[in-house]
Length: 376
Image 1 (cartoon, one colour):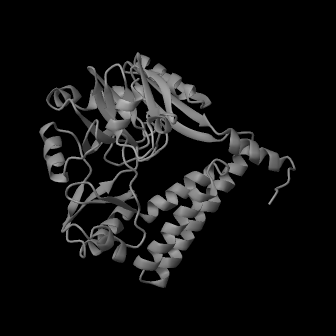
Image 2 (cartoon, one colour; image 1 turned 180 degrees about the horizontal axis):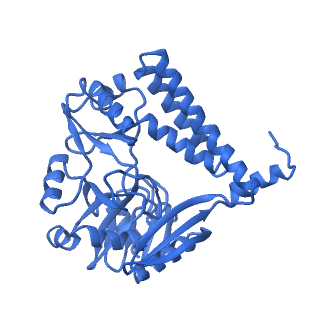
Image 3 (cartoon, one colour; image 1 turned 90 degrees about the vertical axis):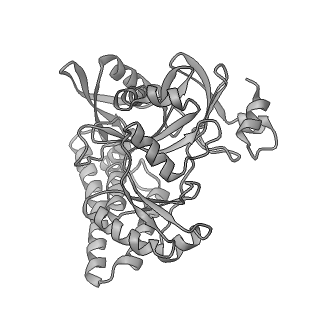
């Protein structure tokens, strides 16, 4: 691979090509060798991949900052823009879909080619027609629904799983299409998109977002992404339901997630309560829900291990047998231990219920139950 040539294309802040490419990993997928950046480095996004034989770069999706105080955060963040576009933020699995020498592939945030999501993208979206007309672009999408190998959030309007396209970008440079152009283009190809709530002046956006988030919270949804019309300025804001759900999930596997994960969600709750809860009753209800999301899942985890169970993340996937086999191999190749709970056929599909085993939480709880001490 000509590292210098790709270094110039990636426009990295590193002093030299070697300083950037020492962080890339050599991988194989779909019969192709490629290089992936598993973490953001020197101005290049996490998940950026390079296919030397095809001379293709697929840029990673940029990390989106978060606002915790709407009243001042939104006007400050969007001070250079006269409008803010508000769309729903979905609780799913973020992927980029691109065509490499005729093969449509779906890439995870970490730059892995996921065989399962690749197959579902081909099935659920008219990707061939899109890439015939736009070969140098990539689709940025969310795989949502209860039946995915990565997330389990159940949307009432999603049967199994679906894909929502929330962005279209230049594959090589990562430049985004403006929001209105992207929405129009996706409508042309019948690509499902996140809900659009409106376009507002920056000073009017905090109140609008507060109203939207209250409705989303009642429906058990994740939150919103606020965008400049050109889609170059992005910031997110999430619901209390999402904060509590994240904490409940983390404390169901209490020794798998770090203190930073937990503390950041409590911080979001504190700022949101201070800004949006008008009554003492509302604040106390939030505090009760927060406490339950922390304590009850961990109590359940302790009792489960005491009963001889193994903790982990439960998932269900369905699809063509060869795709399911490729997915399970892909997950095991990443070092995950899988426990197959059920493996059956339904209408020609292979349906597998499996658990990603959490040895860390299981073993630590077992250690304490067996009389081990806590070093603090």
